[in-house]
Length: 423
Image (tube, rainbow, N blue to C red; front, side, top):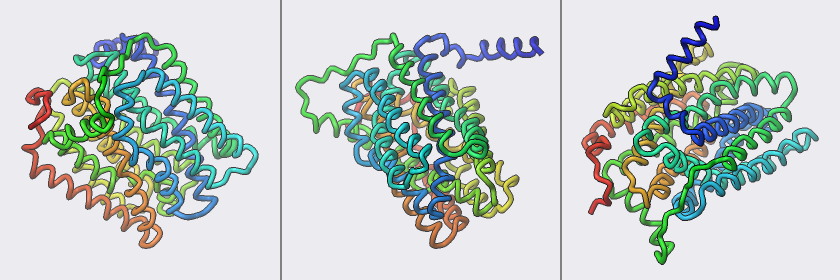
């Protein structure tokens, strides 16, 4: 047994991507994020089940997602300026502390059996404000830690923290909720934010802000937007992941209803469905890490978008959870492959002075359109049913993938892309 474990460790050490872990600060960020994300995933199961038990409305599940993402919709392009100009390490510490306090507020109410939908919405809004700066700050720090040469390995490895959490967190959340109640999961999530707080405090890498004295703030804001929309590859990538966020990803926020109404599952069963998505996402990440040195990134995003659309349509026709689990896994693998590869492309293509603002446009494409997606799917699911809503979303994503194939000449591999603003 020990010999097998030793061989597995030696194999991992020989894996090119594993070499990124030699950077102390990367390890800190990686484990801090894993700890924090796992807590969030544990709470997600409990919170979704709690809301659906409390109100029984699919629209309310969507409403929580809308409140958590609305700040990103409004502010993401603007706060990219802050990421470029301010101390990102201090921003990461501050956001972790705010999330700790906000989540503790819900945990206390859940313990006292006074937690209301309105309170959950307020905390979701606060968390959404934090999410306008935290992911961009953390990801730009990763680039400073590992450098450009190892960025293609570091980005998917950093994303693996979320997806490892998505694989194990929901299962833990389902078990904890069934055994100890909802409040336990809220407390676990509260404590989990201490991991990222410690990691940010312990960082040694210098992350200097961009030096842009005297430039009007409106120019700083619009510079990142203009670069994104004038660059043919960035514009196409933005539209592709925007379509996935608008029509495809909202299924995630209907998972409590999908598990209960379509498959008649309890909280533990809901956790199993979430874990299937997480396992698929990890598989997708391992795959793109293994081929990260090949010029296949633009092909990956097209294939991933296509497989997502087909799988979501197929899921809408399934009424057995065991048949659904493979489709959940494919959805997890496809979404992470598209979003993560797009993240890498955005960072490689964007010039250093604009990196925070351009990357914030990538984050806006993922989360900025999500409130609209969650609203339409929540309302449609209440009016017409879950299955037709899922099928419509899958068809819309598939159409977007077809359009991407028809315009694939606009997607150019990074080695042929100049880091200059197109005229």
